[in-house]
Length: 389
Image (cartoon, rainbow, N blue to C red; front, side):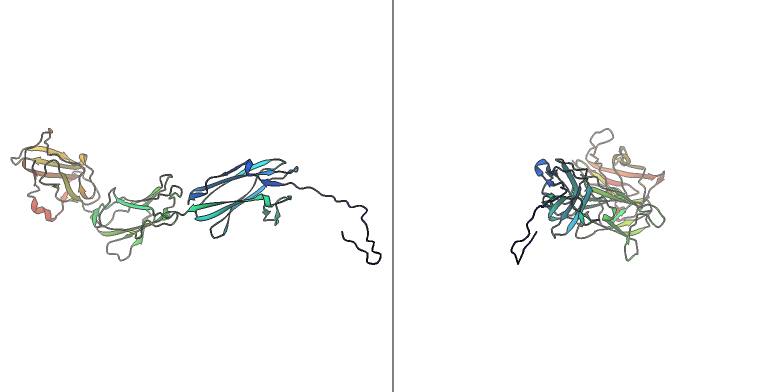
């Protein structure tokens, strides 16, 4: 009230002044009643967990309490995390609320903000009347280490790593694997891979889709399971025609880190006719053990594959069943089976020259010999091996 009298110099005097009011409640953040923060430095992809208590410090009840969480990133851009209604908040009540969110996309220094009883966007007023608001807001800094490690890409044909130009099966199983060291950002998207194939006599490669032109499924996706962050894409093309193909694969992790500066690129050859080259033992001569080397074409593995070893007098001393003793695959083979130069009874054979021949069949039919420059070392399908101890 303001009053004055310029003439008599006796301004009006107040006889009675009465104020009436409706008191409002007051909530205030109180970390002593409850506080938790997961950690202030963490790897991108890890989860932030933040909880803090707010206490109704007045003698008046509050309705269901609105709370809002948001993050300000390193560029001071605001990202709302969540906004939700909590339970009613009576006098002297303590509410401890928790928020959890992923740090993907927040590299660098950030702040997490919590605001109780914020402005309601539908009314543009605070959600409830309250005495003060400055004590309803809190912030916490945290730093996120950016995920900048390249994932590891691996490609195998029927379980092996091939060399450029190798022969492969006409129906290969091409397994493409991607492994990432980040144990939080799981590789869960098949679009992380791009697979291209260049057919014989083609100039450009074509992207491989989930199904081929006939509607047959040719890509099978297996997502990663944390903490082992490794996913797989199995490419099983329909029977390929004869010729030389080129496979190209690119991949990234969830943070868009590329698997390498250059795409994986390999040429491979397909020959549909089932053939086998002459089988060599390596090393030859040998003293303690030797393995067998050969190349298969086609798409089927021989169901009968034996090597008969004889003395120069024609006595059969050893039969090796490679179909049982070793893993055989289409393409170049070096057997994981080692022959130690013993006969069928386990006794060591004497030093000297021995003859051997190979018998291979698929479904009862003899496998055709593939013509190579090595044919000059065999006479009527018989080869020589030497034992020198």
